[in-house]
Image 1 (cartoon, helix red, strand yellow):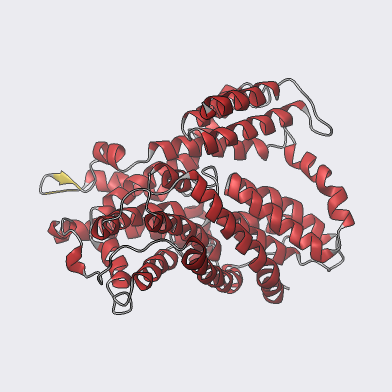
Image 2 (tube, one colour; image 1 turned 45 degrees about the vertical axis):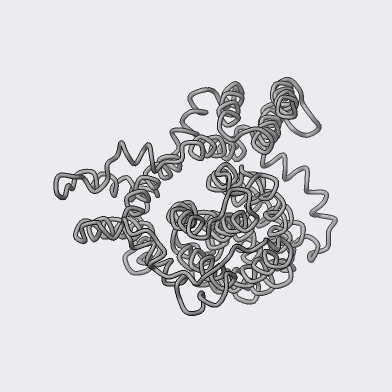
Length: 478
């Protein structure tokens, strides 16, 4: 009954938003905001798949958007292709033992043998460390099979608080790692790009990491303390995990076959990170590789693995990977969030300019310290309920001009870096990232728990970035 009421409410908001104008917002902007609010209600209370399709349909009826733009900016978006091909690559590598061996290095160590909390800490630490140079979505789906094995070994069942904590921790720390470095992480790069386009100055990767990694490690420790003393789950019977406790199917793979998959996969990763590594040494090659976008490396990887066969079997069976390795609900939801990102930043609709006009009285009346806090809070809130990409683009575009007009009282570089971090960390609502939607739809946790503990993580993010992150970024970036 509640779902029906929320569905009716959301549809009323969506439909009515196409026919009204509020305050300083024009009609297409109101339609975008109304569609977003209605979709968010449905995402949180009903489902993540069909509401995303309704969102695309609703936005397509805005004359300034249209059906062709709606489809090309959602299902035709390069990020949609990136996710699809990355899922297939991830499925291929999940059939090897490499990722599991990497995680088991942490889980089966002597430190992890001491208690289940030691094991939990090292498992989540492995997620954080590997995520420093891997896309958070890729990272999450690489570790998901390992987590499922841990559930099986510990005899955990859906609904157990400890099981919920593990998958929430994996989602939270996948996002956290994406905020700690710009390597293969689009959201800090977006914020840095906005700063560069406005000022002509560059925040290099090393400078960002000097700020992002310490802040991320502090948040990692504080979040573990929240899990331990606030969530405080009942613990399963625990014996130290060893490699023998894990299923050995991947070890049966032909070693040459496994090595070929790993070689191709690391080639994909190299193509993702190489442009940033050689930009100063070989700028033309860096620009050439970057010009193909983030979807090219996994597409190339999929094609090569599909062509190469060993013992009569391709390295990746695309039909099998599409059915078993691709999270279609997450892809459908991501198509909706991608379209929201496109229309919210569309200059023809002008939503950003109208939002800037709306908050301008607030920004002009606040003292610099409160203004910094304001941008940290709104960026953190936005990244928890809407697209990280939108957050990085919109709020950096707002904050940098304000900082530049503050006569040096606010560092434009520091506020851009902080927003890049905050934009990466939102985990509370299913709409924040595709793998958050997968987490809450898996049965191991639910929307209510994710909202609660993702919200607590957001509060920690605001406190740490305001008290430590911004001053550190200002010291490094000036």
